[in-house]
Amino acid sequence: MANKTVVESEFNLEATYPSNHVMRGTTVSDGHGIMQVLAVGDATEFGKVAEKSSEKSEEPTPLDKQLDSLAKFIGVVGFCGAAATFTILFIKAIFFNPASPTPGWGQLGLIGALIIAAVIMLAKVWVPVIYDVHALRGKAKELPRSIEQGSWARWFLYGLGALVVMLAVGLAFGVKPWDAQAWISLSLGKKILSAFMASVTLIVVTVPEGLPMSVTLSLALSMRKMLKSNNLVRKMHACETMGATTVICTDKTGTLTQNRMTVYKTNFYGLKDQQLSDNENSRLIKEGIAVNTTAFLDFSEPGLVKTLGNPTEAALLLWLNGQQVNYRELRENAAVIDQLTFSTERKYMATLVDSPVTGKKILKLLHDVSRKRGRPVIVVTHNAAALPFANLSSVSTDDRAGADCAADYLLRCGHRNIAMLGGSLDISDTSARRYEGFLDAFRRHGLEFDAQRFYYAGRFSYENGYAGMQAILKRAPEVTAVFAMADVIAIGAMRALTDAGRRVPDDVSIIGYDGLKISSFYTPKLTTISQQVDLLARRSFDLLMQCMDQSAPARHITVPFTLSVRESVRNISE
Image: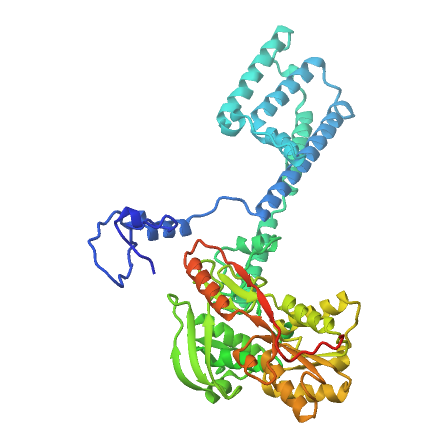
């Protein structure tokens, strides 16, 4: 869709066609105007395209060039062989013929005059051969204009004139052309004529007459083979051109080769090796693609999957089908509460569903962030700098530095048997960054962390915090402190410690992450790494307003965190 106007200040300078021009066949979806016809027929843009598509390219193909070089080589070899054959037979007939006496000087002069005149008359034959020798050596030269454009009659007259001049010179030396005794015998003349005919025959037989036919048959067979593989070939020489191609540029989405889009590469957050499995992230991805699309796959033909509907959504379903996932079953099991379909203006689709995966209502978004000048997208609390999207910005806290600060605080309080409760390092980038930050503090203090005993991976929830703390107490009962990657995990762990008869912080200290409001109302009040939510929201809104200007590049902002020291950590070094 394009906006057209006659106001010069509103012209789109980057548009393919002027903002005050419309093409024939344009559909006006909004507004009105009076049009002036500026071009018709071949002068229109459609006409120009049609004319260009019907033009024949005069550029020689690689096969044409090779055949041309072969023809020149055969011509040179054949002509040289013919010249050598004629010279040998001529010398033999004149000087080594026992049946005829050796001709006199006058007779040799007349024969030489005839040969020189014939050579001049045939200049349009042998001069190009000499230039072909230069071309084969890689030093091509232009043919003289007199050879290239001169007619045969012209060169015949040149040769005839040269013959008359040479006969006049011979007459001055006493050679009389009208005297029969001045010429060689008829039998000797026949031998010379036979030598010339043998030379011409040699030139003719060196030309492979069947080569053009064999080349045409080969291209025709190649054309049939390409047609069987669903490749439309307009000209036979295209087969030869494809065979000589060294670089092929293809459309990565498959729209040129298969007439449908395909997923080239995925970059799902928290998906190990971008392969679906049976974990929670994979189940959410499967459900999100199946439910938040309106396209369909047609399996009516064996071995062939056809797509129906929006090509972008169909490409996602094809990818899901390639992962051996039945999208219909997932779509039918999820109850759609409301849906906003995808459009090129919005560049996103939204579906509100009752998710059987989580048992909650989830708003699923399918957003086109791949467009170079698409709508700005702001990711909050996750750094998106590594994602390859020009319009994707982010506002987040430095998770690694925050975890480092939490672990360092516990170590400075004298704790050494410190456990860590977090998420799966394979599918959660947040967990991985906080895990590395925790290890940074241990390395700085010259300590090693025994992940086998002191780390528990689960989900960020109260239930997993409770279960994780129980597991740690069984594996490492000597634990004196716990770093929880989220406040909800820390609160669940505190409940588990209370149920196990351990007091917080007298027996076990706990520090959380996030700074949720509930952490300051729990007993004891939770020491935590507080993310400044208000500041995150303000910075995100400000960044969104800045990015609404399409010329503004994507930015990735880090908001500072604070260590909120409360009541859940005891200093045991005192």
